[in-house]
Structures are given as structure tokens and as C-alpha cells.
Amino acid sequence: MSESFDIAVVGSGAAGIAAAVCAARAGCSTLLLDRNNSAGGTGGFSGLTTLCGLFDGAGTYLNDGFSREFAEALAERRPPVKMGRTWVLLYRPENFRAAAGKFLAAEPKLQTRWNTPLENVVVRANRIASLNGIEVGAVIDCSGVAEAGRAAVEQLLATDDTTQAPSVIFPLEKVKLDLNSPLAIAQILSALASAGLQSVSFMPGCDAGITSVKFAGPPAQVPALLEFLRRHVPGFERCRTAQTEFHIARRAGAMIVGRYLLTGDDVLGARKFPDAAARGNWPVEQWSADGKQRLRYLSPNEYYEIPARALQAARTENLFMAGKSLSADTDAIASARVMGCCLATGAAAGNLAAKYLQSSRT
Image (cartoon, rainbow, N blue to C red; front, side):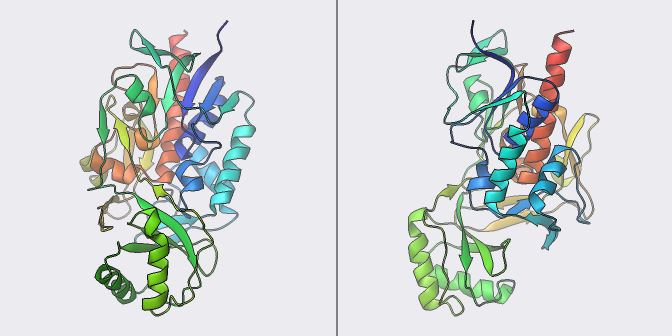
């Protein structure tokens, strides 16, 4: 007799963690599988130290439920921090991975399979019947690159380097310069451009004296970047990073077109929906290949809603999606891709998949 689960979750980043835990808590036997060797995704392994999209304009939680539960477990009693017009939660990546492991291990109806790429997806009568030789009742795609959606031949949309260019993220310490000064940042960027190096941006770190750097160039150029900063930019003479390997961090990838396509107009217009499943208010944040950021904000104190229909595939009736794979155009995903929103949509997709199975059995 073949192995079977009520729900399979593909991908174990923020959305996948939330989807798997919530599906299991709803009483469904749940399988979480990932091609990597442990849970964490972007939040645990990219070098990020700011969890964005959790809070409204006053610094209070936008979404209750699992997204808040996970953030509070991660926060270590640390309050949110104002960053420009937005609020973020500073965290340590190792704590993100540890929190993910604890939440997953606490659910008796949840199993995990690591180092397991998605393979052999069988679709029958507009339903995914099995994957990796395992029978499933429903699938939640949290892969960020629409792995299950692609296998089910759903219509996909994709981001590219004109709107969601990747970056290399790493911590930097021993910088003796005010990185909150627009003039100082302009001088740094000008010096880098003159040297033919890609631009950088700086984010606050969780620990005093450490800042998080986003570099628009390739990983192989990071040593040259650091050497240039030390030699040519005052205040960086003794800068160093504890990181020894550098990797590309992808902001977004591919989205599955669902029963509703969330648009940039929905986001910026703070649209509300009768079947709302999650809330977001992060600006439409786009990055070009040269490291230039473009931000478009919602009106102050506003938020938009993500409908449940944007979390269910258009054709495959038992395929749900969350996080960076949700049904959104390239403008909308530039807001909804941040981790706070991924946690919220992941939790919603886990509950939606569980309700789908309950209704299909009655």
C-alpha cells in the first residue's frame, strides 16, 4: 500500500513553515518537503536580519494567528524598529532556524522530508493525485518558484531583474560611519560607481555594531567590495564580515495564477475583499539590476487584503499556494513577498487546504 498524507507542503521558508504547522493543527496528516537540508528558507539562510511586513503604520501586528505567534517566539522580547516609514522586527538567522525547528517538531501530525526535491507529480481530473510516489489530498506550493504549479501545468507569472533583481546579503562590523546619513550613503555609492562596483544598501542589524549589507553585484565580487571600502571610504578602514561564503538571495521568483490575481492597484489602493485571508501593507518594493530601489507606499495607516481566491490555483482544484508563489502580478508580489506576509498567507493556505479536504469528504 502506497504512503499517503492529507496535505503536502512544498518548500520550508516562512510560508511553508506556517502552512505545514497550521494544516497539522487543523487535524490533517501533513508532509513538509524541501530540497534543502532543513527549514528556514530566505529567513534562515539568506543573511537577512529584518523581518518585514508584520506591522501596520503604528507598529502593531497586522495579522494575528500563526504569523504573530512565530514572530513573538523569534523576537526575544525585542520591540519592532522604525525603518523609514515602516516597522520591522530585527532577528538573528540562527534563531529563525531554531524557531522553525521547534514549531515543526511540536506537531505530531506533521512529518518532514529534507534533501527531497519535488518529483513525479501525477495529476488526474484536475487534481494532484500524488507526488514523489506519495498519495496526497491537497498540495500547498510554498516553493517561491511555483514548483508544484509548474508540474501541474498551471499558468505562471514571473519576476525578473528589472523589478526583483537578486542581491548578496552579509553582516558587516567595525564600521565607523553614520549609515543613517543620506549624504554619507550618497558618497559611498558615488565612490563605488566610480570604481565600477555595483551599489550597496545598508539595513540595521540585530546586534550593536553590526549592519546588514545588500550588494547588487555577484557573490565573487564581495571580497573586492570589502577591500575597496577599506582602502577608499573613510570609516570603513577596519570593516570586516564573519561570513565566509556568499550566495545570491532571490527576492521573488514565479507566481501561480489563481482564482484571483492580486494586482499592484489592489495593493496601492488598499483594496478589501469579502473572502480576505491575510493583510499586507508593505510598500511595492522593486529593485533593478543596478541595485536601485523604487518604493511606492500605501496611504498612511492603510492596508490591503489578500483574498482566499489568490491562494488557490485556477485549474488544479486541490492546489493551494502562499508566500512568493501566491497569485499576484509583478507589482503586487513586490509587496506581498516579504516574510511577514509570507507567514500570514502560509497560515491561511494551510487552513484553506484543511477546509477544502473537510468539505470534499462530507
